[in-house]
Length: 324
Ligand SMILES: Cc1ncc(COP(=O)(O)O)c(C=O)c1O
Image (cartoon, rainbow, N blue to C red; front, side, top):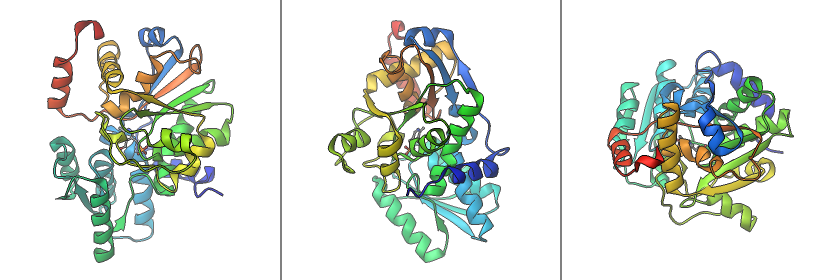
């Protein structure tokens, strides 16, 4: 039996509701026409801290607080770190975030502004996670994994509950895949309540860990990744997320960086919505008008909106007017 139960997602909802935002479902006629489906966007880019990550981070930190923990520690290049720092600040707990030496200054500033102690180390996620676990052992701070933890996955799954309540007639939900915490939470919630709803995972061509795992029938660990979608760059799914993705996710599909860039620009120009590359990957897929999505009531999860201004300016400069 999976470590993540539907009841844990219902409990997570009770914990986080009223604290994290109930993000809107946004319909946009021109994007829907381009995608040739009845499209709505779940705007987690408007979430507290700028991404869905606060849901899992808050759920886990609340449990640490309930069990009289003194603080939390994690290794993260971005959204998860800021979310853990925010949640710790809420409960007046100490937080320590290990970030890569090349971390985006904007994301580091966000974590610091919530009172986190920020430590720079190496460039790989494994280095950061190992260091965070060492700190946890040495100090007693509770380690909060970015995706491979049922309490974190349960928090992310609350998006699935919200979508079913906000749009009961939904037929397809499209979700970006990094380490698989977001999609395993959403798929557990959605398939537990509405098995007829299709769940599709989207990865960048340059980080196809779930795609290759499905093809080979085992958990694949990539040697390297290459994509502008920094939140989806994980080398592999986790032992907790992989079996759920295998069992409950209907399809895993790939999009390339040009498609992601175009989707970001279209979100900006047509909907005045700022998504980071990981957040725009789902729209990139839907814009291809795939058979599984065409003419269906489809929700694309826009998972985050944190992008530093320099990267955004480069993206706008490199785009041509007909993309907008
Ligand atoms: C904006 C954004 N979207 C999607 C993801 C992928 O989430 P998961 O690792 O739970 O699959 C991340 C992960 O960092 C993210 O920051």
